[in-house]
Image 1 (cartoon, rainbow, N blue to C red):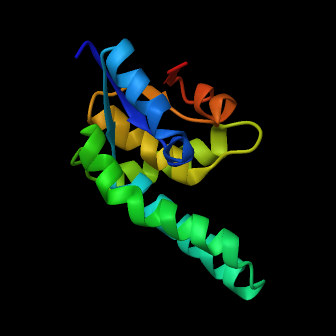
Image 2 (cartoon, one colour):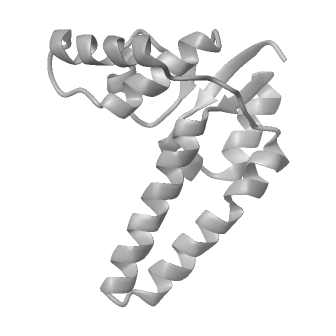
Length: 141
């Protein structure tokens, strides 16, 4: 593989065929971090709870299918969960960044960015292009 890119939460909603194409045509190694997994699972649970509350059975089936495919999706595509840590220095960095960045800022994305930097990854597969450009990430087209 030529390069590595992190798969952000939003990118896990892409078609599997699109992810396979990225891997094969671009010789791209896809990875993620524990916090992205947490965000994905939490988002899916919130969406399922909302669909249940509104009694939207078809949406619940679709969301359950997406949620249930997640572990095997990572396995099937060889998406590794790279080990990274988050310590007090990172927390200080996060708080300092929040004070210095202009415009809307997602603390969760910045936590992921810090983990990416520790893993020496600077590219990301995401739907939130403008947010990630603020951090200096290279966006996978």
